Image (tube, rainbow, N blue to C red; front, side):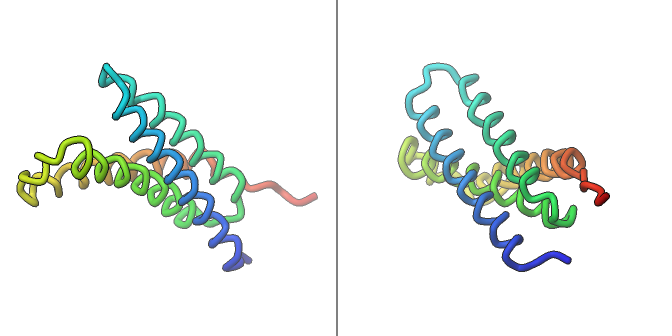
Length: 128
């Protein structure tokens, strides 16, 4: 039986990983000279979220999926907000649908990666 405490613990770890990942993404975007440099912090974010799921193997597949997607989207929202409000304030002139499709594509990517991470961490230990 899953306890409320383990769900909160997984979400707290996911949020922490998402915030740290988001801040690292902002740092890379603010200081990078090439656009490809964004891939390594995203890879570390994905591996960090998979580690969070691995540490919380008692979660159901739906809870693991939601934990991954929430951490990934938190990091992506931190990055997107910093780009729109701080690094490129001119992006505020983009229509709402322009922002919606960008965030929707990030949500789609988070869902695909979350499904893979959920399957990857589907191991549940057997009791002897």
